[in-house]
Image (cartoon, rainbow, N blue to C red; front, side, top):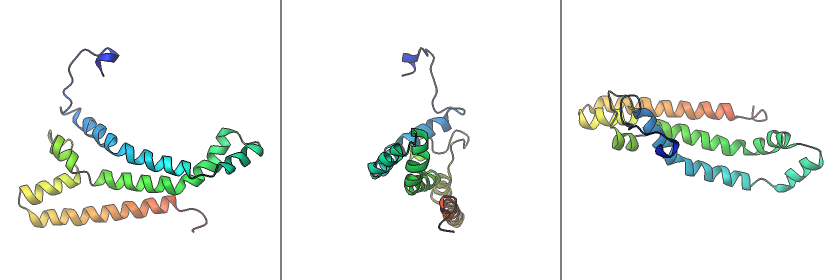
Length: 155
């Protein structure tokens, strides 16, 4: 693909400076389909009568997006963002298979570090402590996202 854009050199995708970007590309590609499917379902569940009413009231596409589409998509966006954050926190298998945290721990994620400490270094207590802290971080992230997405009527 890079040759189609005129790049002739070689890229070491798993070098120190490129490894995290390579892992991120794989992770984004991995979760893209589910996210788009959820957004597509959310958009399709918006009643077209609402768009018709907005156009009769004289709303342009910008106003329609911010006053009709975005408020009705808020629960869908909340679910997708929460799932993406938790998925990003718990990535282990992709990192383990691509780089195992290397080079020089530049792609080390918490779940992979937990695995290395508990099952490769045989530090089970330390791995357990990492797991507990990891669960607390996931719960705090979920609670924080729920507060961010809470509507004014819920307060």
